[in-house]
Amino acid sequence: MIHIKNLKKQFGENEILRGINLDIRQGEIVTMIGPSGAGKTTLLRAINWLDAPDEGQIELNGAAIDAKTATKKQISGLRGKSAMVFQHYNLFRNKSALENVTQSLLCVKKMNKQDAILRGRQLLDRVGLLNKADAYPDFLSGGQQQRVGIARALAVDPDVILFDEPTSALDPEWVGEVLTVMNEIAKDGMTMIVVSHEMRFVRSVSTRVILLDEGVILEDGAPEQLFCHPQHERTRLFLRQAHLGMAAGE
Amino acid sequence: MGKVFDLEFMISTVPEIISYLPVTLKIAACSGIIALLLGFGVAFVRYFNIRILSPLCKLYLSFARGTPAMVQLLVAYYGIPVFLRSLNEQLGSNLSVNGIPASVFAVVALSLNSGAFMSETIRSAMLSVDAGQLEACYSVNMTTRQALFRVVLPQAFTVALPPLGNSFISLLKETSLIFNISVIEMMAAAKIVGSRSFRFFEVYIVVALIYWGCCIVLEYLFGCWEKRVRRYERRAAK
Image 1 (spheres, one colour):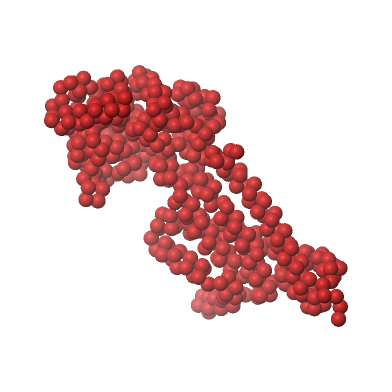
Image 2 (cartoon, chains in turn yellow, green):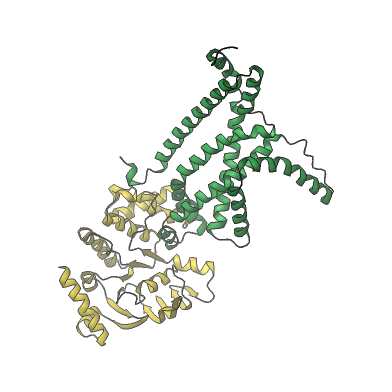
């Protein structure tokens, strides 16, 4: 469903992505892990064209785009089939929870107001926040904001939802509720790509784990395979550090 | 020699002076609205760093902020006729200066002056909106225009409103300069009344109080407006 070919991205002198090739099938829950600076977030953001790659092609369920020749229409086509959940939620601050969700329904899908509100309320209900429909983001907890962020992403009716470290800015007490919502969406068959250091999620939900390092895919496989039988020394090193970090945190 | 301070006389001049308040308010309002639109326009150009226009706007800002409002008024008053005359000569058109009331020159000069300050306020307010807001708009496939009008500008406006209020209050007070280009507004009326009796002190006190009163009302209105636009911010919910 998603085909990424030879994706490259450079920030100044700094090569972040060095030719990524990746195919993702419908319904896969892919987690990307790797040391910071490995290019996970850049790769994720490229799929939503928030960071335009310098080179390479992305095809997402018929929406094809080449970095060298990208047009506005193609970018919009790609964005119409993907949605992003941000590390810092990035909810529209001047809009209520409901308005955050209905925004794209109204101005991208051109739904009429009643239908948009109805759909928006359904989606808020799905993330368990119908009672906060009229609250502004400033008045919601981190966990609630992130759940609204997920509802907003669902409103796009995307083929894939991209999660950029969705729980790493949260206080520990809110992590659970966000992971629960992500689990439910995963069960409904949504294709998801998640950048996360949340090993609980990686192990329990993902169907596939990708380890990025220095702009290339180092490992790619099922979680148990990757965790128990890593192919590379670097993977072993990274996992040990990640586990140690987790052990120290607990 | 009469009294040092003639309160009765002072009170008697109020109706005549205040009858020119609408002129002052009209000019302030017109200039304020044009300045605001101009301010938004220039802020856009600078925010998106549009080629050619951006350096031109910078030049305009530098001039408008680097010269006194009084001088700008006089330059507009004497400059626009010269400009029209040379336009007539070049194009063979027949634009007449005489048909234009002096208050138009005043509005032009004041809005150009105030617009410069407002544009800087608006631009910095736009820059203060978190880049993540724009990204979030793009992530749900909104266009740049939709993002601007639905998300970025409303938030920028909240930030910009208090300094814009200040600009508007300054503008109201600066209208007191335009009697210099023969517009009869409140200040001019006071001068006329004063010169009839040579009791300038009293009439200037009257003018001062009227300006003060207007500014208090404006401050109050802007305060209410600010509270309204800040409703989505947590700190305002007390």
